Amino acid sequence: MQPTREARIGRVERRTGETAVTVRLVLDGSGRSEIATGLGFLDHMLTALARHARFDLELACEGDLDVDDHHTVEDCALALGSALDAALGERRGIRRFGFAFAPLDEALARVVVDLSGRPAPQVALGLRRERIGEVACESLAHFFYSFAVAGRMALHVDVERGENDHHRAEAAFKALALALRMAVSSDGSDEVPSTKGVL
Image (tube, rainbow, N blue to C red; front, side, top):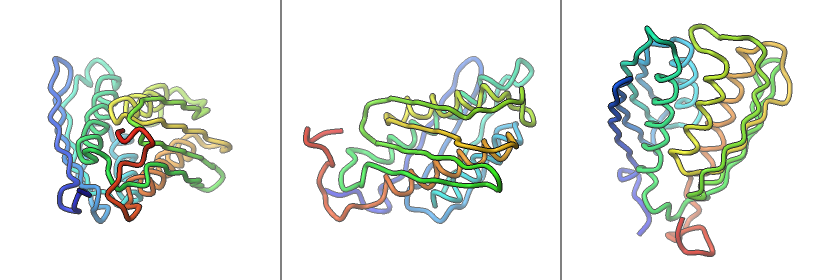
């Protein structure tokens, strides 16, 4: 049976000695979000992701920011990926594949996603700064890796050009949003989109 619009909701609570994250994700939403991670730039990226994917997203994190940003960024990505996986259920009736280009001024990003059930991230952001706001640039790349693993997807992220690292990162998140919007959309059937019959 194809998941109903109401059924495509994922809720996750992730608690460790380093972070406490709660997520509520509605795939068939309007782009509304309430984000509070303690990291302004991460909040900005997740808000853009929800808006352009047309997901409704509530995400709150209390992390050990006195250490650094790493655990917060990683655990937010893992929780969000797990919520996506939960919302998709058996992944029946979805297009499965999604791809998008997104520019932000001089920057251009390409994202291709396959909701295959097999984690396979490949990420090339090409960021040159050490940090954007309070977030280490290496943590931004790690976000995509962690999200793909928890969401059980092949995810290819390539920023093809751009002089401004804020623009490069934001273009990548927006391209991810657009690719996910395509991949989770209905293909008009109630079938699992795989010759294996399962994802």
